[in-house]
Length: 229
Image 1 (cartoon, one colour):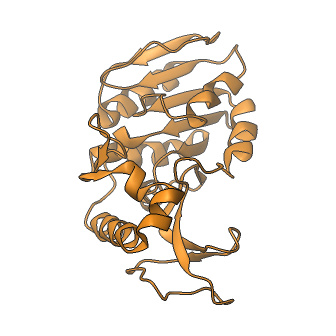
Image 2 (cartoon, rainbow, N blue to C red):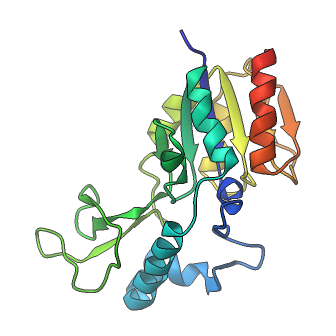
């Protein structure tokens, strides 16, 4: 039976494909205050701005490709039972070939009903005011905005609890509740932390192997380290 490798990925792995991080150091996302485009309050205040913002992100996503980091994680499925838990809303893991991907913060290529959160549709083109669900309610981006619950969190915890290896790639571990997932690992399993500027991880009992490299280089090293275990 293959060992279970659970990987938590953040903006750093997609940055190498040309997608800017969700929240840069200046508090902006693609030049916009995140409170204007990534909160329920922003949606109520200016629906047109929010729709336009995600339409542009959707178009940008079509222009980029998975990088080596995404591809190596997909290739690791040959030797491990790999589960990707991602904070990213892009589909680069899937396009690289990963088959078990859980999106904590939603998906850019999906929309959902403003009335029924379980009514989710695939959506690759622009979303505009007047695009309605089957019951006549406006559709919105299928994104978990700041201040909203994270519906996939319970499943992510269950996946994490049974990991044989756990890797953190390209995330600052500052955005909760995703950052708290690491605390659900069995304390006896190794944790790999890939980031060019790693921070100390508080309150962790596991042995942490730090790989201070960008995602693509770090995932390549992770592959080698896993072979030696």
